[in-house]
Length: 515
Image (cartoon, rainbow, N blue to C red; front, side, top):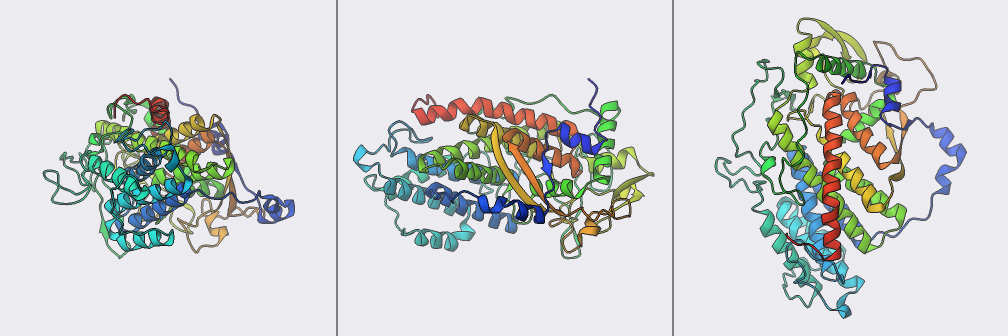
């Protein structure tokens, strides 16, 4: 089947459902939109503890670098601990590990008990996940009025329920294949390291097989270079939450070198990367995140918080909402990484160098330098030199898979695809910081010269589906993926969500047959 023509960038944005609207600050003030915001909705305890967990994840990201698979597992464990503790005080819901064994009598099903049980459950699992932040986490407990040293397992108390639920979940996840402590054979004590002996076909400095993944040297920010290996190639062995197997929905493979389709998709990436408008740069950066990223799992849990505020959720509904989104993204990453490992596919970085070896292409010249003609060997995605392209195979896109899954889950959970949010960004803030807008707008060595153009943009997120599609196409725009990676990822994620939703509901209704 012939691929769509994507070279007309403006039309493509519309075709893929990217509702990107540039709104001038002066227009916003004049319209009075900001003054019409509804009153703030009181955040539930679940919302507040998710805030804490996202901050802990961002701290981990700063220390260890971007690890979307690991981050998704961390956040899934946290929202599951929250749910398991809460379920003890619900009439029907059962926990993921202990079922209804923690069920408390109606007289104890108070909001205060739920909040306290959630606090202790999340605190205990976060101590296990983020030991370097133990002091900070204890401070968060005290700030919420709880004693971090209360290790009670008395189920007649909410702290006992929370501690017990957390212990069961932690014990289960310590043996889930993630290699959290680096104790698998061959891991040498390195947490979350590979124990399946993956080796890339291509070395960083030579293309042996252009259809296979290639490691890329990054600037280390200190004047040197670092070449990351395939991040968590063992992730296909991690126990999913709802999926039966990691390969359950494995997509058909990507196009290969020699096919008309692949050459065209690589050319589309080149065209995109050479013609990015400020608003498209903002899309790329919004979905990529920065040094304190929480990955796509955290990104979509933030969107879930937007839904919580919009719908004025109470604690019970927030617990269920975060539980579904966190776990579906966790499973989506497992399914995605299984396909990445199986196909071991290339990325535009390698493919541009293969197709145009010894020739010149148009490409982004670096922060504030616009687009120039350059040797293909110098072509660079619209991305910082310290993080050129994610260090793992391309097919399918992780952003697309996680976003497809989370978006569909939010639609299933709320009963509607409507989102209705707006994200305000300044184009270039993450990739070209410190440069004036005219330099960030520069195309082909020249500034557009339109005084009305701005780097301050508002990205409209009308539906969950459109938001997922924005996340997916952002990876093509940025130069990280070909379109096939994106389309397959969105489809895979949606399949994971549709399969998982009935199991989520079974937990809520107390009808789970196996755990």
